[in-house]
Image (tube, rainbow, N blue to C red):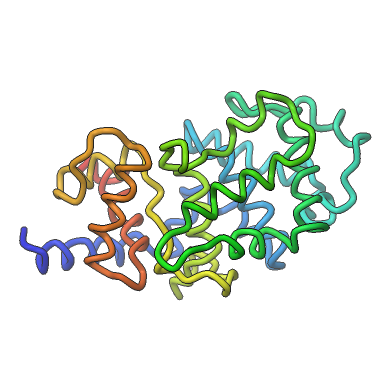
Amino acid sequence: MNKAELKSFLDEKVHIYNNPNFIDTDPIQIPHLFTVKKDIEIAGFLVATIAWGNRKSIINNGNRLVELMGNSPYDFVMNFSERHSESLSSFVHRTFNGADLAYFLKSLQNIYKNHGGLETLFAKYAERDSMQPAIHHFKKAFFELPHLPRTPKHISDPFKNSAAKRINMFLRWMVRNDTAGVDFGIWKSISPSALSCPLDVHSGNVARKLNLLKRKQNDAKALMELDKSLRKLDPNDPVKYDFALFGLGVFERF
């Protein structure tokens, strides 16, 4: 396919998958339980954090997360104290456990009290054409409180050559306003043009088959390469093609 044919092919796949039917099979359904911005972003951040492995398990544990927070994520975070830690101790999703969750809630409280909230912190370090430096600085702020040595592994750092798939997915949810009812578009201070595709095994394999990506590893260098390819197709909304790449890989076995 030439560039025009490839764009037409991928735009058609975006149209197929970027619609409300996508929500029922995706972890984004968890933040869609809420209507208030701070509830949406906290629920979204936490479920994105555990979004690896079996999708059914991710969704089940995402629902359990919001139940543990009394279905009021922002209120729970702002009133969180050590006495709540015991009620969280049984939570486990793969290597993310109750101790990790307790720190995440404590750190989120710190971010809302002392950094102006999640959007403000990410926007502070956002660049015109990349959110990867912002992710790096966000992680530094997120772990500025005393924490267990095990817990930082649950947020990836692009400056350590990670593709940071889960946090790029979270940013897509918050920033991109697709008018189709999937992504929220509730963060107005960051441009969708700065977003990166959540690069994983599915989107990576499809991207390579379509010659959008040559690098074999799904790392930060591969993400930069994929970013350049997708920005050529749509510089204003490059990450919309995540729907096409993911749909082709997961649902069509492309």
